[in-house]
Length: 152
Image 1 (cartoon, one colour):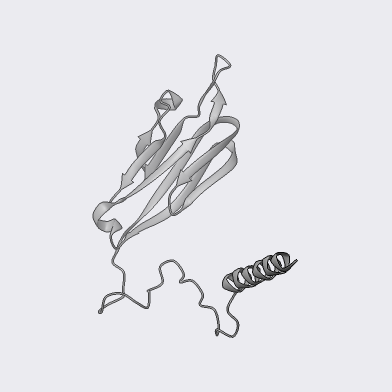
Image 2 (spheres, rainbow, N blue to C red):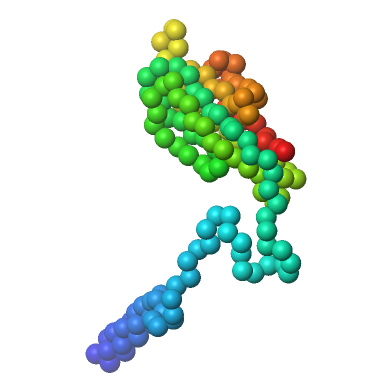
């Protein structure tokens, strides 16, 4: 009986400690809002917090074909969506800070569509930057996604 009581008290004490450790702090003051993208941070190196910006670019992602397909594209952020083909997405992009030195990869990964023979093949895709075609998957003949390293 004594062992059972000791075990029960130990389990209750452990549960109370574990619950207390995972609880949220009360009266800790207002929660900090995460910094908005592009907003200067409050920490870091001394000096100017202004970001260096490159020239704006118009990036156009295109996926051809007909019907519906899943498409993933990486531009200003990553996206994955079920779309109706043909599909076009235009984004304005501007490189900032370290991106000016190393660039940023933009890409589109088309889903599969039925080919002329009834077999599924990658949908054709292209990427245009400032009106110039910079990437394609040879009309869907290549299984590779359309990708381009955007630089200034």
